Length: 134
Image 1 (cartoon, rainbow, N blue to C red):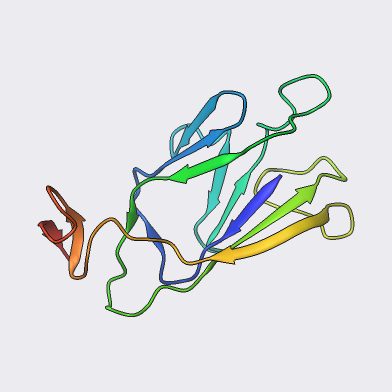
Image 2: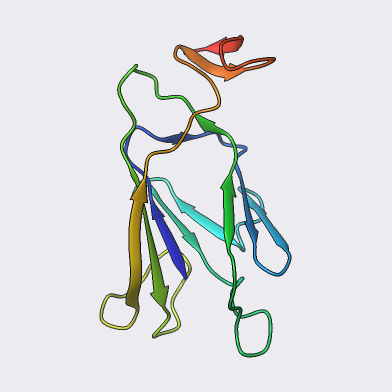
């Protein structure tokens, strides 16, 4: 299981999509959250169910792509996204983890790159060509 803790400035469009690539691509969106579950109130994305598809689990490169991350409404710097990997210790809903049963393995943080420049909400031909503004 992997969790992505988003900073409060990070906003996902309602039509966001989560693509996780291991030995194949797994797709998830708001209508089919079986790969990535998004808890809007906690600013948390839980990725689960893609690492045990093969017998013995998956060991190798993992790529996560989250589409439709919107520019912040204010021109403030973005906070970091914290990524934590967990060893599942219990059988819980995808939206939660239990620190008494699920053990953190690794943790790192990064600042996302935005597709568009402020004040664009959406952009077209280039990152400075706004198709919608806040």
